Image 1 (cartoon, rainbow, N blue to C red):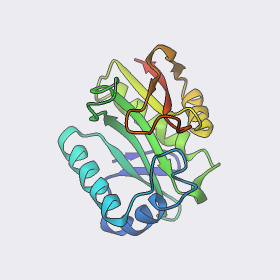
Image 2: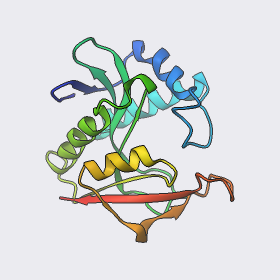
Image 3: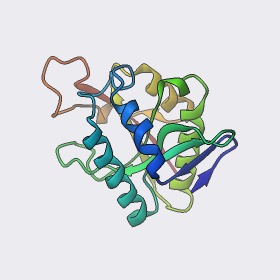
Length: 176
């Protein structure tokens, strides 16, 4: 578990399942992703994430607001496991928040805590972040985190159909 001034980053718990599923079924939240997630798919993500946290000590932690215990989404570190991506095996920082949590600086706050964990206790030499080129809000968070654009690493996401505006992906990175 990691704490910031306003947030707790922790493993997912059962009470997170409903708001997590609703968030991943929200077309606005998922507009930079190829598809919405069904309840079963959302639950499967929780299982994978919690397994990674148990295995590596890091993962996409659930975000809880300290002031009221509200589930806000997730943020954290993940070793990219999609073999079809050119950045496979690298560590990434990422986030996804409920619409109600947008615009409050939570993604930046949680992202900074995740980077500190990655460069501190995990001693990672570099951490990436990537998103669809259309996702300007996430790109702005990457910039606020002091990450630099690594245009030489940009790629076309092979699981997104050609011609789809979210197929081109940009990559940012930060080194220890």
